[in-house]
Length: 69
Image (tube, rainbow, N blue to C red; front, side, top):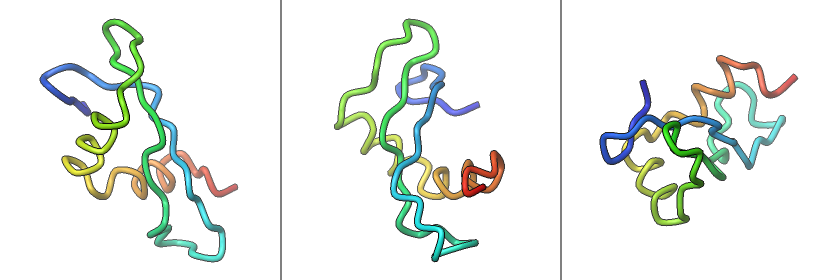
């Protein structure tokens, strides 16, 4: 489970997917996300914290959900 501030995170949106960078997608990043319990959007600062806490999350989600198709 992906958490931030001990709260579950959902609806993670990935941006910066460059198909020429397949399969690494090193330019991708988390663009937005929501707290699962309130559906409140994370602030820009919280999104940066999420990216710092889970540095490979964007690449994992791209490959897991095949967002490059």
